[in-house]
Amino acid sequence: MIILAEFFVVILKVLWAFVAAGAKWVVKPKEKSVAGQVCVITGAGSGLGRLFAKEFARRRAILVLWDINSQSNEETAEMVRQIYHELDTPLAKDGELVGNVLLEEVPPFQPQVYTYVCDVGKRESVYSTAEKVRREVGEVDILINNAGVVSGHHLLECPDELIERTMVVNCHAHFWTTKAFLPKMLELNHGHIVTVASSLGLFSTAGVEDYCASKFGAIGFHESLSHELKASEKDGINMTLVCPYLMDTGMFKGCRIRKEIEPFLPPLKPEFCVKQAMRAILTDQPMVCTPRIIYMVNFMKSILPFEAIVCMYRFLGADKCMYPFLAQRKEAMNNNEAKNGI
Image (cartoon, rainbow, N blue to C red; front, side, top):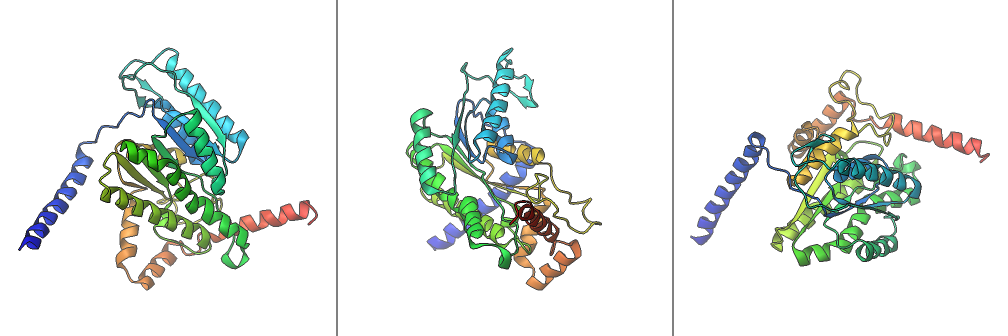
């Protein structure tokens, strides 16, 4: 009898979750303030990492930028310093728009940006850099696991070293950064961990087996950790999963779907993806897919027979969409080898 009563309560909670989710479409939740909070961003030297850094800088967060490339990381830091300078000269007033961001009243302080050269593909580098951050900056409030790589080879043509590199940077590094910063978050019951994954971590395509596997792994890690935090009743630590569609960053340059379909599903502007991700992070949204059709595609993949999915892939031109990208990468590699006399 007790289990029936509990089951009835569960049904009510599930229905309420649907109502609450629907209400957010009507009444937009207020964005939380991250002013003065320490935010670590991996892969901050370019792409999404750089854009995330700029967005958090506009909200007066203290930025800790990690990248394997010192020069590009310093370039991002200089952009962040310029944003800080614009915010403080003259000091923006509460409610004023700066860089399309509505500023809240914040305590007077001078936010700073710190840069660290870190290869997240090396466990020792992650742990030693994390220790430096704790010693020189303080405890971390927000962790953005953004760093990512792609090999750009068909499976049977891809060297084992590149497969391992893809898995380590795109997936294993999330374990190490989280292990480095999560203990203090648990102690304080405060923090936010963001996993920048990909739509290719929800559904796959041909030719990028290592990349898809790494993103599937990152999403699995993220979801399991989310459940662990819920089981531990650490409601002060939030998790956000970011799954964007193909973006116009050059990472998959040449990737093409069917030309008749492409106008309806063009590569996304990275600035748009980061804006959507920031909205999700600042409202403690558990997951954001960009564009929204990705939610539907992921749902259909879960219920349709595999052969039906193959038919849809072929219709959309998604079954071989990565082949032009792979061909370009192969040609570029051959040209470099010829130039170097290999």
